[in-house]
Image 1 (cartoon, rainbow, N blue to C red):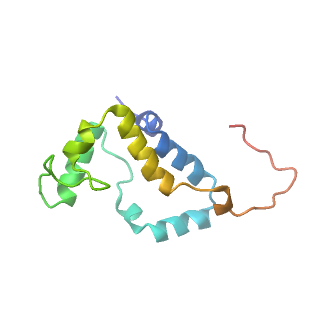
Image 2: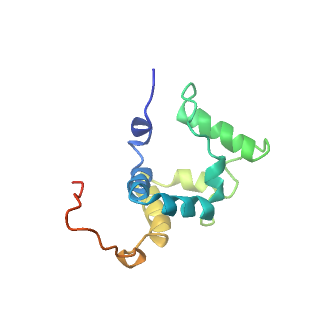
Image 3: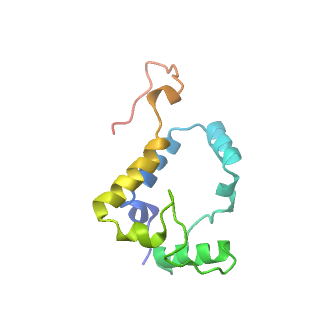
Length: 125
C-alpha cells in the first residue's frame, strides 16, 4: 500500500499551511530557506512507509538522542515536563500550541509586495 505525502500530512494543519506557503516561493527563495535551515538537508527525501509515522519519529528521535530514552519527567516545552503536558486536557494542549505558534506567527507586514503582470492567472484557493 502506498501512502501519499498528502494523506500523511492531511491531519496536520500547520504542516499543510507551511507547504502552501513554500509552494509560493521562487526557486531562489527556496534555496535561501534551506540556507537558513541547513537541517532540512538532513531530512530523508521520502519517509519509509513500511513503518508507521509514530515508529518513524520514535526511531529518528532515538538516533538523534544517541539512544537516550526520555522519561515523562524530562522537560518538554515552556517549563512543562512531558507528564504535565500530557495531563492537560485537550483544549489546554491546543491553547498551549496556539500560544507557541502565535509567537512565531507571520504578519502581513512580514511579506514583500510583488508586482505581477495583469495577465497572470491566480489559482483559486
